[in-house]
Image (cartoon, rainbow, N blue to C red; front, side, top):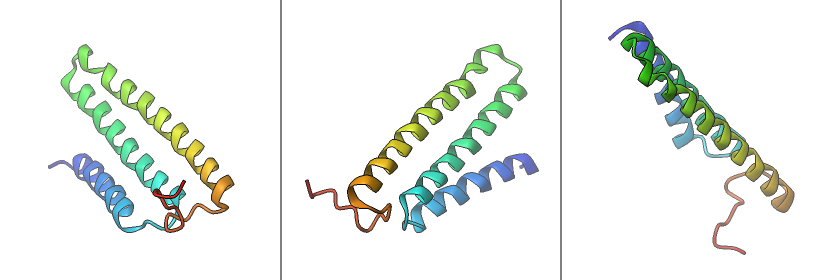
Length: 98
């Protein structure tokens, strides 16, 4: 395993553990998701460069587009919950309440 692969894998796993164990604020959960998407983007980019194939070069850009859409939807949800509930604590959000 090369140091680059180890770094990308550890970055993804750190984002995943941060998402799993640090669930206090919605903003921190969104940042963990963005870190995971960034590590996947860099991994796909390096993978397409190592293969030297042009048909895999669109995959990182597609992932980056989906990541931007996910970030905008997450920030919209963050603003909506901050306006309605007054906080972004995940403990105060009750999904069964109308």
